[in-house]
Image (tube, rainbow, N blue to C red; front, side, top):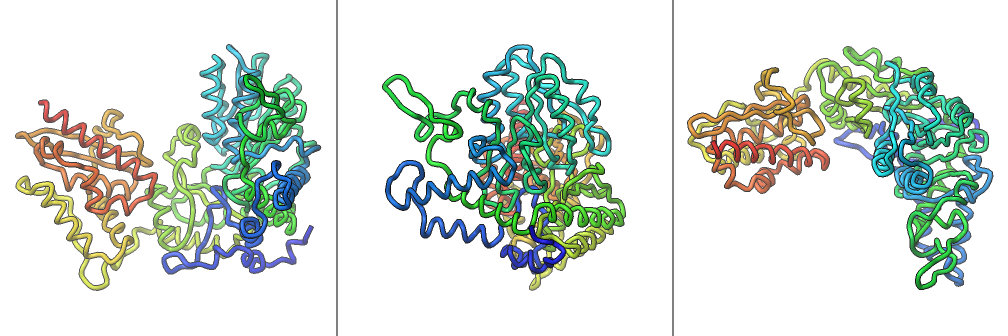
Length: 570
């Protein structure tokens, strides 16, 4: 292994071509590796070389290319087994990623082992991928899913967790590392306690695999699931590690080519493990790319990367702690490179948007851990997560921008050639039709040269939307399915419908404010006769928001339509 102290930040960063670009005129600061890491040039070259020079299907052909592809594919399996300390490559099943690996276990081991009255034990900090499959299995099998809480600092309450193990517990499943908090769970103790009771253990290693030196033989878990794309490798490929003795006893999951030994008209026999679980043409390029990423991590040294990450994480905690009004969520003494935080008076989505405008990539929201956010009583967080390529300068850039955001809204120059429109949310005249209001909004939008200016216009609409009375922010008035909290209330006066709305995120407030500008004070029939989806496309709203926010936008449109339908019946 290399001595990382001899490898400069510049040397590592040069391996990642994505970092050479600018975002909105600023050098890219990538702090979203927990979602998906950037790829070094060697991985990119490996994929390109495979498709250029080596492509053929595996396990089936006798010709040269097929034989070479098969050899490289199976050598990559051996390489992965060696990297994670698996006693044998037969314990390695290639999957599309962590999610598929967990579902494979739920559908085979779960169906075979868990019955009515049995229990599955997990934690409240789990990623949805390690929660939903067990919910489905418990419902299907008449079993019980038990969920253990975390302490205020984001640490698993180990005593309470162990106390929940009993003679009905068939499986303990938890994350090696929390993707939302960075908490490194005491999995060695949990595995020992579980095995003492004869309970199998599955670890979600999506965040462990990129950060921690692994040894499956020493760890002694029954299942370990991970993805390549979080560990500098390609997307769409991952693996399940499982004990050979367990895999041998499990039935196939998917049927098809390459997972069979013999097929007859009405019956089949199965291939040996691990191929019994790998039906169909696999992601050959992804497997080779994952092996290339492993080689890259080994060339630096995973132990050295861990030491470097700990140092940078400590520095980051100290620096973000100087931002006024910032609260770190998840302060476990044992963490990997994740810092989740909230900024007082700012919704996480708005903070993420403001950071993005200066080239800083972070993740915002519930991070696919909605039960954890509910347990902590927060809507979500801003999450900055570290990779091998991050530096103290990245942290300093983040902190400088956070201090600007905490100090108040940044002034925006608006259009460069004409004055920006004034965004006012006074109730439009009842004489205006929906189409005339659309025309007015389009005129406003045309004053901006690009999408960024139009997004700022949307945010200003949100800033000027009158606040909704607290008494109206009820569950009945909440619009579910949005990334932020959104409320809508309507009243009918003199045959016209009037809306009040609010949201805890500025960009979402802007969306609902624009919808109100279009529909407020209109006869319900006018709204019902208008194609609202076409309307918001005409004003360009979908082009200003992310794909996930479009789902929320659709829910808002549905609610407005429903309110108009109810008003029409009055």
